[in-house]
Image (cartoon, rainbow, N blue to C red; front, side, top):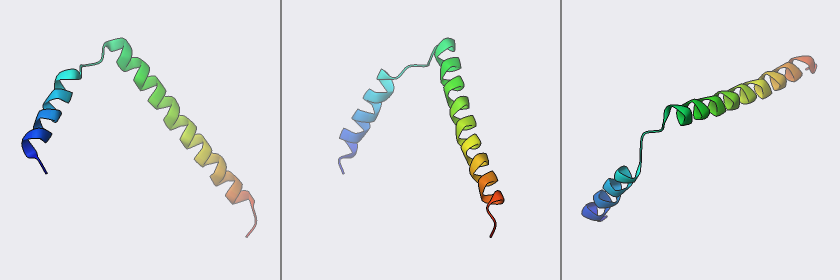
Length: 55
């Protein structure tokens, strides 16, 4: 484990990263929200199917 080399690579990554613009943030939020709704919908459908199947 080479701590100085690791810290240098972490600092380089932080320097390359930037804060997203408002438009980018809104687009990312919409995509994440749609993903959450899709996964929740699939889970709800599976739950409904499992309730309909008799034991």
